[in-house]
Image (cartoon, rainbow, N blue to C red):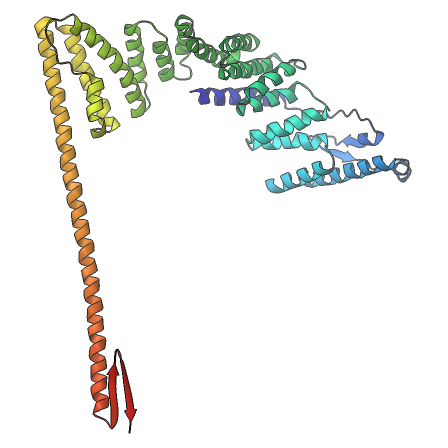
Length: 439
């Protein structure tokens, strides 16, 4: 569930960010050396620049150190141009890295961040975002926004919180503010700082009501971890009304935070009706069985005389290996219906008789499952025995064939030996070979 929340958070906030960043980031160099500004924006392009070489006179005036720096910048630019027009990803990476090996050009780092973002390689996107930030050029709220999102995606929660705080030094977009607050709330939750998780979830809602559902989900989980069931239940009911993230999960959350077995049973039934597969039905049945068992024990304690209770926990412990999930779900549904009929409609001896009938019914089912399994084991053993016999028969046939081949070869050698002995030749046999001396 936590993983789904992080994925939903990341995708939703990035949709907001991409809508906000339709225009390319303007590169505003603040160089310490005059030649570092030898770039001009190419109009009508996104993040592309021309490098304007120094004149011979300008180059001649540079110190040896700056000449080396200028040459490295020029080489970096040349490799960056190759990266821009590369036709495959491996060449983009190769030329970009080569460019950076000579000089840390802002546009190269910027392009690599968005390249890896497009590849959903958030580890490398975060790495080049850090280098971009450390470079110190053109740092704005979008730079830090993306960096916060990458850190959240990579579960670098402490770093995410620190970057989020710095983001607000640059921020001027309340919609993205909400996304950063949400990422910080999620980070605090994963660091077990539930109070701050709730505080920042509320800040996210105030900054951008569109993300209220995701923020409410964090608040629910934080309150639940603090065992503040009443507060958690209020948030769970909101999620249920929104059917967020779906009616199945929302129903289970209301049930989990409720203090009433009646309420829990109601929402368990709703969850079961909206289960998408057998596994989810089985999971809900496990929770329903706990309430059934608690209720049955309470009634039996108040009923005089011994009652041999058909507890589902004992049934499943005994027969678990004899049933697949579909069989378990169907059997529990029938058991649950019969048990609640006994508990709701009978008292005293009538209740005891009803429970006995249910116990007998379940014992018969268990015995049949056992017998069926024994028969299946017998059939499997017989199939294995026959398979082994087939293998033995095939081996015997192979041996017989080889023996026949050997006999045939022996016969041919004897015939040849007899033919040679009838001629003026002295022959004798040694092993499988025949040696002859003609005279």
